[in-house]
Length: 200
Image: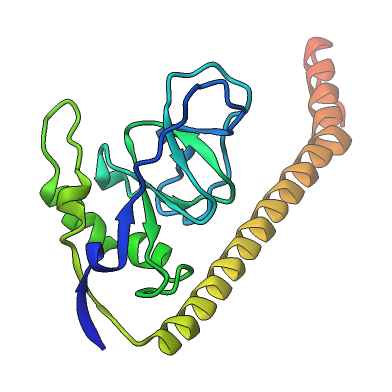
């Protein structure tokens, strides 16, 4: 286990596209979900002024308002906002599948917030972010950790989907209850009141 700087194992991608009409999917800050490591939203075929390119596997780090904890792995090549720092791993120094979890953690976000400058709103630069320090094990251990962490993330998402389905089921049962029993009962009570009596 050794202590390294983020800039020792990763670098900022500074690739740009020639035109906003190159057909790339578009990612803005609004598409990054706080504390979620996977990118699940983007736009396609939409007019934009973005010129920053990212590649599949890069980490898209929301450098504006870093306290929102926005950082996600890109599942494809695309085009993103200038308020997103595109970070690529240096594969010979860090396992690419572990880097997203190193970046998407409270310690790094706290560091980013401390290094942010400006007031409307504050932003953090790669020149500062790359100095974030953390402990990094050997490559074999990195590979093992990455496998475990991605399995945990998959399990978490499975539970989230299950909770959503359960919530939808409860809502549908509630609506069915109202339509099948409570609404007719209320209607009957209201009818009885209009006639000067309540008849059930």
